[in-house]
Length: 379
Image 1: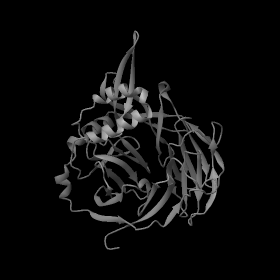
Image 2: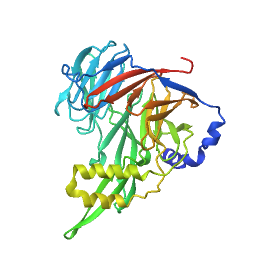
Image 3: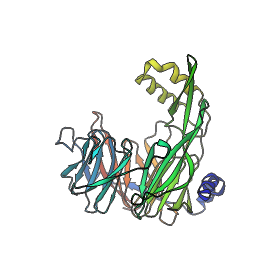
Image 4: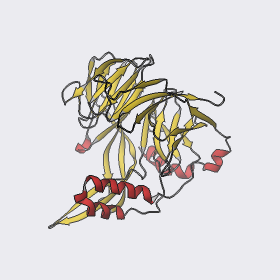
């Protein structure tokens, strides 16, 4: 626990800066194919083919696709040609039912679907057979987030959120926990930074109440599990750290990202969107965000993905009005191997070693999931 915590807090000071990274040689420039080679989702299709609030998508070993749809609390299974094979799950809280899909993993022919509202992970075979579920431990009745499954069958969880109750900008931290569903064993690996929020306090009679607002334009941590390791990106600096399942550091990934201040326009746009949804709370919302400093450093990263072969993808936090999102790609040895610019209207859901699975939303609000080939230089 102490080892993990010390390494996370000291990573920025220990890691080389962008200039040192540049000495390793210029990375290759990859690009996406002009068109997807698999596209699913229709404006008016059969049940399972109309998507709304797509949460995740993963490839099957046979070249098919599983799409998690939070609009219907179901998973749609497609073959390699894009033909719908079956729909798994339904809304509810009983066996084989879902209230919210947080993430999806596929191990062999078994789907692991995390439901943060029901605080459990439900398992299905790709053929649709329900295999049961794991209840996630909730120490102190705190919310628990499923982060991934190790090859050993153990689960990596985030639990026990802590934050300051003082008004203004605040850091939240969580405990990273390794949990074995079979034995119930729980090992706390350490407490780490999780996200930045702003806390607003107001008096109501003799009582004081606090409201916590998330900051999508501020630093937020990301974690991905691969094999018997996991990658942690705190996003406040251009460093991601690779750990084994015990919390021991196995390496650092440094991206050549230059620090820049938060763009106040991003915060203003977010505040306007909150006011539009709840105009009766306009004064409270604007007062809460007035405490957010306009010159605070912007996050370095926004997205984190790991391919089946161990390639780590880190997305640079985009500038306002960006048309593309830049991703830095590290090979399994930890070297910066490539970078790729992906159109801003493509949301990356997951990656393969040479594919990207994305979500698009057209002008009519129709969601589709597309699989693009990643092309090396000269292709």
